[in-house]
Length: 214
Image 1 (tube, rainbow, N blue to C red):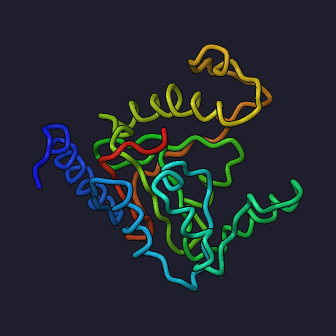
Image 2 (cartoon, rainbow, N blue to C red; image 1 turned 120 degrees about the vertical axis):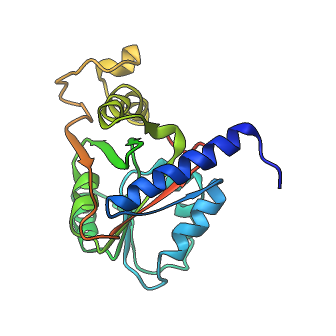
């Protein structure tokens, strides 16, 4: 199968970043498409596993969430099924006991570090501690040169776009740019840099050439 120069570059970069993740204790791989990312993620999940997730548009867009919600996986913790705010919070707490937790990355550094920004803190907390296994799906447009660059991308790109998903009023929704605000509705409350995976192999990173999420 022939590849375009862009696809060849993505493959080389993806494989390089995956190796850098491996050096830091992650279990990482590169795939070309969202469909392949979905298939790889499913290979890491058992049918009887307790499965939970945080906000992860990449997992939504590659089709993984549709499959998990489709009935073949009986032990999912889906906060979107909650009927009240209290029930939703209870489901988010139960996610810490999951066998598999699915998350994303707001940005990644070339040397293999993951950067995320969270509003409630449930996603970054679960990716750090609790679930037995964590699967991160991230497209290569999130790869930045350094960890500092990755933090900048998370703040200046991912967070303002993420705000558009919610009915909130923050400065970035008016300007498209981060204002380093202290708005009561800010979703930029918890910053996380995962510079190394411990225990080794707990976090599986699936890098994708096809653009997913933001």
